[in-house]
Amino acid sequence: MSLSAAPVHPVLFALAAPLPLYASNWQGVATLDLWLAQGLTVLGALALQAIAFALLRDARRAAFAASVGVLLFFAFQPVFGIWPQDSVSGQPRAAGLLFASWALFWVCMMALAGRIRARVVGLTQAVNAAAAAALVVPLATLGPAWFDARRAQGPETGTLERYSTDRPRPDIYYIVLDGYGRSDRLEEYFGYDNSAFTAALAERGFHVARTPSRTTRTPICRSHRR
Image 1 (cartoon, one colour):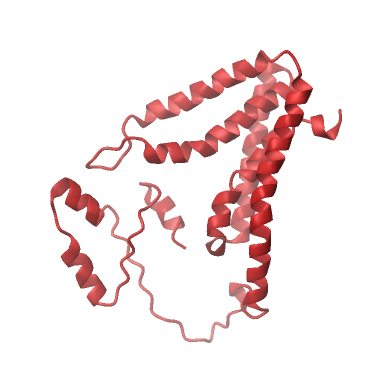
Image 2 (image 1 turned 135 degrees about the vertical axis):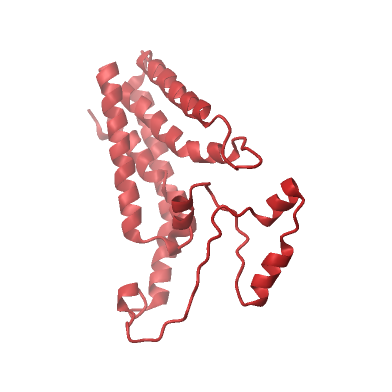
């Protein structure tokens, strides 16, 4: 079996999928967190491939099913973000239906992969090439920016560990009003003008962030704001 025909595309897709998100947030994400995310996605891809192989008894067909599973996993959050939500609670409506649809679609794609009869080697090579391109493109844009930023930081500011603990530190208060609606939502759904509250905070020197959260889960939302 040649290397180009080896069914490695699930692992390549798993490595490539988190990179665009990291590329847009790399200055606030520790390198160790990236490696952990990459490791978990690769393990997940291998687990899907093992499950598909146990059912299909063919490594290349199992790889097709695993790659679909990886892409579905990373496509779930964008779809979940535009899924209809309850106007009051902000929670997605019938979220179980979305989960069930995703699982059913993967089962159908695995069944379809099992029915592939011709040119399996050629399809594997093509998907390997697509997965490799998906991995190379973000690396090609991220790599130079990362190294340029490291050089610009200099030897004394490259890592947090090199800062002296004897230096005075500013008093920073990061306040999260968990469960408190956004000003535009309060105005839209309840007719409440929240501008007096945010203006009072600004007058006291607070910076009032106006970026919407990416999720309704508080711990995950906090992790996005490093």
